[in-house]
Length: 337
Image 1: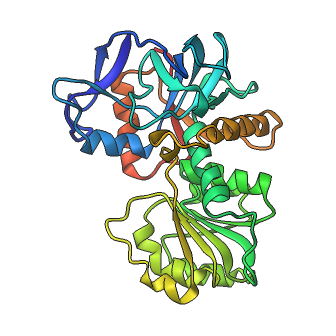
Image 2: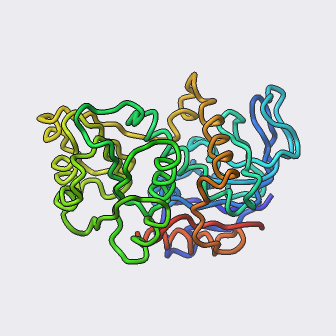
């Protein structure tokens, strides 16, 4: 089967940073689905692993943790899906990725493809939806009020893939006031269009802008990018006893300044459940189906921003370079082979 892979970590500008290869067809066992890939999207995790993680000696490493496709075969323990089902999922970071014609994935982290979306639009949603949903409800527990705090959430990096869906999920499933950050006119318009009540500029001091809104200190802060650049503003802006979640990888993270306000700090990684085969892994199947239902009801929309062509090394290199620029909004998708 055709796939896109690499053999050594390199800058995306290197000729062999990603290459087209031919690999053996995988076989479904256990709880696995064999999915014929119709579309994939690209996330920052793809670029980080490509640049820094070496595959085993003599092996190819296939990236890709967002996909939509059709079930072609099922393992003997599968109960949630059947051959012919259209699915969407993010997969597991400790298994080969979805940048291939066929892909194995555990059924318990797979959801149905929204019926109202084509494969490209569906592929934009899984990883970011899982990340945003888990951050909001499993980590921040936004359903539990913080006494005396404004019933509000500050989402830093609102125009990125995770921020774009977090705004929509917060609007659809909570009564939170949503404050999102974006620094350029086009990204500010984007987050407003997605439902943010207030938009502030993260290239300027954030806490002062939050205070100027006059709604009080937000109970929750969700930082999706460049957390270390905004840490002091987060400490200043958040309400006492508030809850703070992040998903990026600061080189250092001094949490001592949060102590005075008794802020709880939560890291979200959507790969944790499949990586450790947790007892509640099936929650990702459930939440992806919930997202599909919200999409089909017209309550939330895909965050697909641009389709870059078919799934091959050249187009994936373009997508990686765009992600690494830090100037994308929404999601980048590739469809077909």
